Amino acid sequence: MPPDAARLIAEGIVLAPGAAPVTEPFAAGEIVGLAGLDGHGQETLLAALAGLHAPLAGSAVVPQGGAIRSLRAAVRHGIAYLPRDRRTTGVFATMSVVQNFAIAAPGRDRRFGLIDPAHRRRRFAAFREALSIVAPSDAAPITALSGGNQQKVLLARVLALDPRVLLLDDPTRGVDVRTRRLLYGVFRDLASRGLALVMVSTEIEELEHLCDRVLVFRDQAVQARLSRPDITAERIIAAMFGRAA
Image (cartoon, helix red, strand yellow):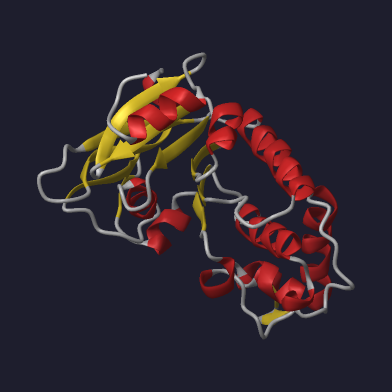
């Protein structure tokens, strides 16, 4: 990987006492999967990359941009994070569809210091079409949407930040097959346009078919690094249990 291709680097990140540090570049144009049994470090690394978790040592680093110490700093450096549990950490249940979309960047819809609802609706319209979001109206409560459509609204929210790096925590969890396939197409398109995508996934098949590289975690460290054509379900599962496939 050319040095200038890295959009984000895990630089000596230690996730637990005694664990081997994780040093890994994440490049423009690739989808990197983070796999592992529950609680083995993959989600903690993703949170550290997003500025949500302070590791014991090391840090997430943006080339020519410095270390990421907070979610605000991550956003400032073009890093967007989509959380796993949309009900408790993603969706604002009392707000409308378009309010949920716009809440991450309210300043983009201000005109003369006031929110311009028409501008906000126009911004959302492009994402609504691109992501095939099905909603009774933009003003409908977000809770009126199916789980898959809520997830697409949340994805639209982070994509509207124009990120260079997209961090995804199990992004297809709890969505239907049709939405899953649509999201796969969106992720591939984003990578083709130069974004770096890093995603935790509990779906082995998803990792196998979507990712360019897979890091398999065990005991709070990287147990195996797999690249195509070596990304197979057998190798991923073996590494999860500390075995070689």
